[in-house]
Figure 1 (spheres, one colour):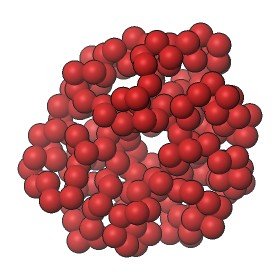
Figure 2 (cartoon, rainbow, N blue to C red; figure 1 turned 120 degrees about the vertical axis):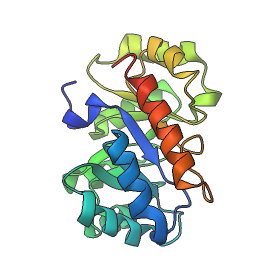
Figure 3 (cartoon, rainbow, N blue to C red; figure 1 turned 180 degrees about the vertical axis):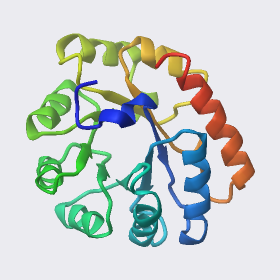
Figure 4 (tube, rainbow, N blue to C red; figure 1 turned 90 degrees about the vertical axis):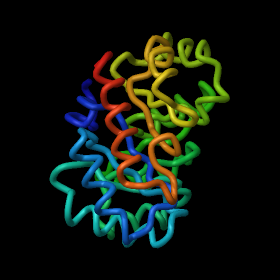
Length: 208
């Protein structure tokens, strides 16, 4: 995969820790990295998200790509950078957010749902895109995107991804997956997170 995500695409899974607290974020992330995850996203609408990103960047910044999700404006991009984050994930394809992300030498993964958004994001300098919400996008739509875009530009499927539907997305040309509530949600025990993390890692190993 010839893109700035580089080594992280060897295990192309992004853990989305929406709603996680600063008290548990280090333990949960440590367990995910132990299972094989190398990309961790803390959505900014989580409690004290910037503090969590700072904690993770300090402790795991050499082991994993740490950053934020639900990034909606350039001020937030700067805040994530100041906290040590290196990854910016958005639900939409805001060109200003993408360009600010790249100006700060961070990784940009905006959300897209149409070919127009996809190519606009690529033109703005995005490193990848997330097909979002994936559960609302027909598999054949993503397959059609792949037919007309550079083969080495990665697509992540995000939204409703589970172990059973990963192969179908992969066959349509998806390169990686963002894993939200099926991996982690507020109140889920660490042991349950570990079990599901291992299941996702094992599923991904079937086709990477």
